[in-house]
Length: 293
Ligand code: IPD
Image 1 (tube, rainbow, N blue to C red):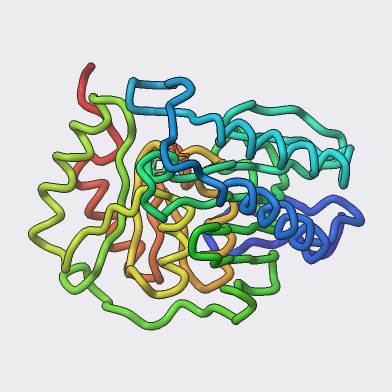
Image 2: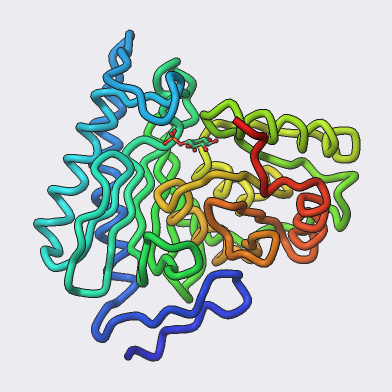
């Protein structure tokens, strides 16, 4: 195993990097491919149609989600044929190298549908088992906003960058009352009902809420100091893999609640110790449960 194995202190698990894998090389590939997909996605037609729905009638897929994922998968398969591919639209194709690419071809699909310029292409190289929360960690990741042409990038142990400039999360409020908190909502009614209840309890006690509509950008905006904290229940690896690395490499702590690792149950991200304060509030509010269907 390679010496670059540790993810201690970030909230991400210590999963070893396969022999010979170089995060900097993986990052260069991620950035090239994300930008290429960005050029495709930037060609958004004036009117976008819904191609299909997934977990609920408002959980949509467009033809561009599919085209972007096909492009990314094809390019990665050309560059690194032994790696696994795990994308939002086409699922998991196992590899043999120990590296799996986790892909959100358009994160923020509803923003894309409506023409709100808060969507991204998220590409991360990950080690471990992406099917289980707490069993994988990103080692290279890129979040590219093709409309604003902004690119957040990180390689494990080498820091995070925004358009080439090093990112270190700025100091911010130590307690929640002054914190600008980003969050997001799932697509199913039972989950939304619980998320609304938790938000109603939190909102009077924080500076304000932001609902950007793109989890990868939420994590990057946190790394850049545009919000102070972020939490969301229901996130999948493709929503967060690249953003986790950008955030943690910038000095953000990422954690879960109720003794579980960050993942679908809950993701809480903020500078320490604010992350622990917010996690405690969310646990007390029962944010890790949905309302009955
Ligand atoms: C969604 C966005 C949204 C978040 C949802 C995600 P998608 O991803 O990241 O901000 O609240 O939980 O599913 O569906 O646009 O790729």
